[in-house]
Length: 511
Ligand code: AHR
Image 1 (cartoon, helix red, strand yellow):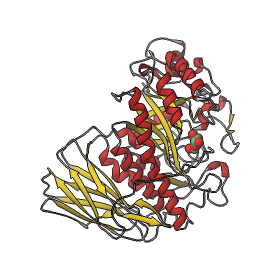
Image 2 (cartoon, rainbow, N blue to C red):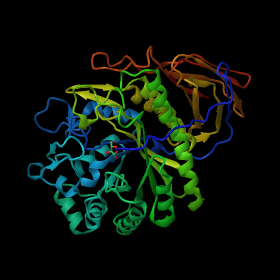
Image 3 (cartoon, protein in one colour):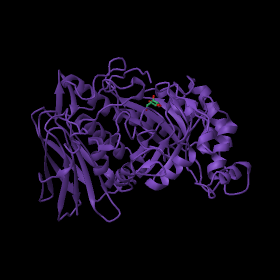
Image 4 (cartoon, rainbow, N blue to C red):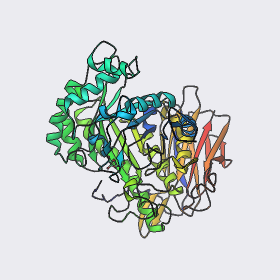
């Protein structure tokens, strides 16, 4: 919600602006696994994300669906290989009472969504609907518990309801509602943005509350619950420090972090109609993620040198003004090549910090903020962000390879950002993938990468690029931006030479 805008100082390269870029890939030095959960998504009861996005209901719709979930959405998300999906919020989570969303739909009570547009919801999409949908998608559910307006009993009842295989009041209730076997949900958020919409708590108070909730959440099934503490707002390092100091390591599996690429919370600007200055500032915010995860990780290292606790960036993405004429509380925005740049840069940062960043969730999946899918009645389109997530899914669960890039500068009014960023990994079949992003709005970038210890015979690639940074996929022209074959990469005498078009994302495959 409202945040201070941190002044982002990006690590700027030493090279002069006119020079070429250079890099080194240590192809024979495999590091830790890049957890597939870095590529997670987020579905909140917000605007048209759940209702109208994922879920069109089982009755009164001509849109093809499976148990009320759009078929076209299921097919598109399967191709992304969504590893986990966070639900039901966000801010909504701390107002949500899960028992209102089970049992016969016609007798469920309604809820007023006070955070997002004040709309009344009928609770027709509840726990069974979400967990069964996750099974259809092949995604692991990540449930965000209500600690802002709920109780310990309510949350542990939820754990028992979805995870307990024995006989108990909650497992009996689940069976009565048609689900015999438990779903074994592993990922649990203990509140959301406890410093803000989750209760405006101080970190000391939240840490104690967390300990109380976490104590009672275990022991209800085969799944070892993975408890994620509500984390810092951007550069609030004291939040992470306090949590790490006050919560014993055996009580927490993940500490969250939220950071949105926003120019100015009071004046976010249009999603599609932005100028050079707005573009630079958005990129500055996206690249700021690098120092955020590095500094939060350093604090975590002090208390947890063996890196048992994951840094979970469970909300990230670009945030702009809503599309003209739409409900301001619904956060519906278009998605341009600028968003593809945010996605490419951010995912490279996560890959490169995957020793500590082991889970993340783009906000949000459909029709809200930096969505991968937009829907309009029976129509659906895939955004440039979708294509980046799809191109990058080759990194899921692959082993990180060190890739160091010395980048030329993208300069704007005396301020500089590195134009080129990248990350690389080796998958279980031995194939190396390298993702490269050039955020420069006007200049192509030539990069020469010294490939050490690799003996590749074959190189192929895909590129996401477009004529204008402001380009987007619309319902009239849904395939304007899509990945194409990339031919500007050559491997000769251990040197990889690549020419990256302006504002482009390239993923190379080397065998
Ligand atoms: O993603 C939209 C909102 O942003 C979430 O509900 C909240 O957690 C954050 O402030």
